[in-house]
Length: 241
Image (cartoon, rainbow, N blue to C red; front, side, top):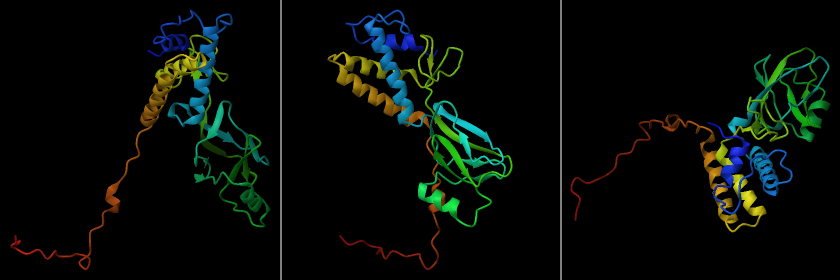
């Protein structure tokens, strides 16, 4: 069973015997412990979404172009693009980017146009493509979302924790350990350094297990030697002592 925000915060305080867990977090503005826990929960969620490409936060966007329009909005909750995933669905072709300013200037000012493959870049928080579409088509890409929690009904919380029953998209132990560390650190508790080391270890462990390892085919590197390449070792039948 998934832990909600209140349960996560309570578990974060389990090993801090000098602090009592509050009965509620969201809206508990008169309780210093509740305020500190909520601030830590926000911080943990934001840094986890920012610092690693978690598969739980990976999303796919589909954009339908308009004739004569070259720039398109990014989706709500967008954090960053996944590398090399921009795809022209109409032509089943890769869209090349992200282009640098120099490359874009060269592409857009050249006399000849590629005409077949689209190029793209990010500018002003929007996706810009070239050449400008002369017909409607769809392109897709993957991106990492900054939204790290949902309501109990599964609705994304774009602004972070909103209710005590909100659920994390990432494993709860990351939030338990992170909140425990930032709470301990803010209160200068003796175990803050240990809590930080535990948090780092859990983050590293979860990152290592978050995606399956890529299969490596070693057979392609094994080439049978030709007759000319074969060598016979000159080993005597009797090895002298």
